[in-house]
Length: 123
Image (tube, rainbow, N blue to C red; front, side, top):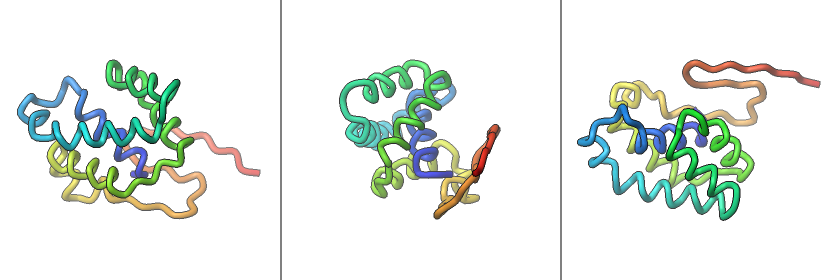
């Protein structure tokens, strides 16, 4: 997964109804730090509103949040590591298998993750 995808997955875990209260309690501090850091990348205005909308409806706003982070050239190693720590709690099996450790350099037309659809046009 890209840095943006790992971070958005971790943010999703913090607001997901499918995550138990015990897990939410375990990740709460790290999640809040991650959220604060992401908010800093997005700045005020529309980016902040997208983050707030994402927290209320993660499935609906996920793509918009990913796009905003990509446009902000998100690349904070500390925040990615915080996201990986969250995913290690939320998805220990996937974490152990390296699901959240993907790194792609200078890729074009690359897609990593679950349940994706992609349409490429190269010129």
